[in-house]
Image 1 (cartoon, one colour):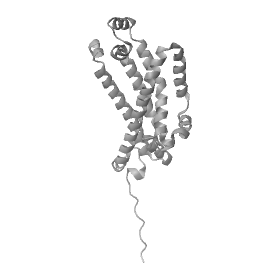
Image 2 (tube, one colour; image 1 turned 180 degrees about the vertical axis):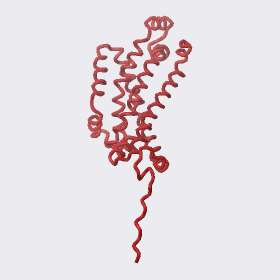
Image 3 (cartoon, one colour; image 1 turned 30 degrees about the horizontal axis):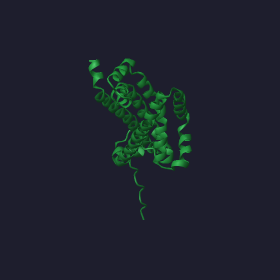
Image 4 (cartoon, one colour; image 1 turned 45 degrees about the vertical axis):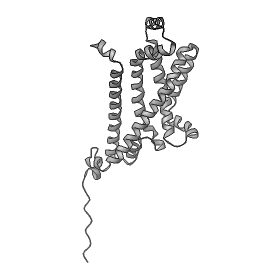
Length: 231
């Protein structure tokens, strides 16, 4: 009886474990898209959470100067906590889910957003406030019609930094299997899957660039007077 010949190994970029592999992109497209969408969702929700918390904190710190050091110091102290340690501290409260990653990243964004908002409000000229007060603007109207628009460029600058930082820090959520592209990145590193490592790394960089450009475009739309002044 003639022995069966050993099957000839398939030679392609996957079996060769190439860094650039079109076969990987086509066969794992849905997996990459799902991870990218999760990554994007975590970044957007966490930064929005940071904004919701940072806005009243910055107003409180501006209104009561004695609290400014406490607010800025506390948010800065949170940022100095290593991400692995912060997530571990949150797990008993929020569980092993995406909520832990979102809350952790939202807390990390506070130090950037609070400082940016305070700097933006301080940059509003005093004579503009006095003119608005002379025209009968109350505190709330002055805040939303005068101070906030003038502070917006500085605030948007801090928002861009916080967003790009969140894109990078989201990958740490892989320790909870909620890291978006970070899950695939860690998996690829552990298995030495070069195409997966490169693809997820490039997608993280592209996501950060795209979000930053979107925020720049949003700022230009929201502050048309800055474009006219530049022109």
